[in-house]
Image (cartoon, rainbow, N blue to C red):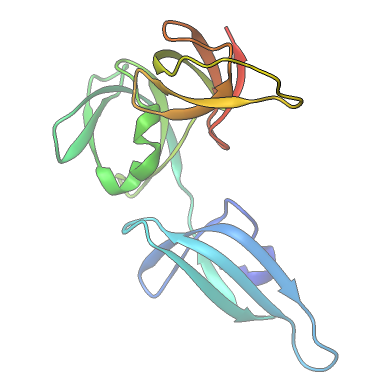
Length: 185
């Protein structure tokens, strides 16, 4: 059990048989009375986002997620299939776990999956990844005083705003947390 004052971004805990991961944390102390802790959480099983409020002194059950590296194999329509490269054991991961970040998956890429009681609940993406641009509008810089951008589509379907000089066939580096263009490779 941990005190709710120890909840920070990235901490996982269980409450009422639900598994949560903290995405945002705020602490407010009124003039009188106990402090209020509000946390934005993501339900690790359903993928829904909630706001939970606690008073100072409340306790929740923390959980430890085991980290294991797996290789992405394919999408069977209902699950993403990963393989442990040491034991060749395959894991099925529900689409709701990866949600919008599925556009970062590429064949044979390695990804760290986080498990709780042998159930995959979360993942850790690399900070940045390289992609090939497959579709880009032709753009003319013109008389722009500031950096103009255009939207390109990568090999995985990821849409990214890039400078005008990026063309189809180029490789770009993208920040996976913000989904922003970093540089042309």
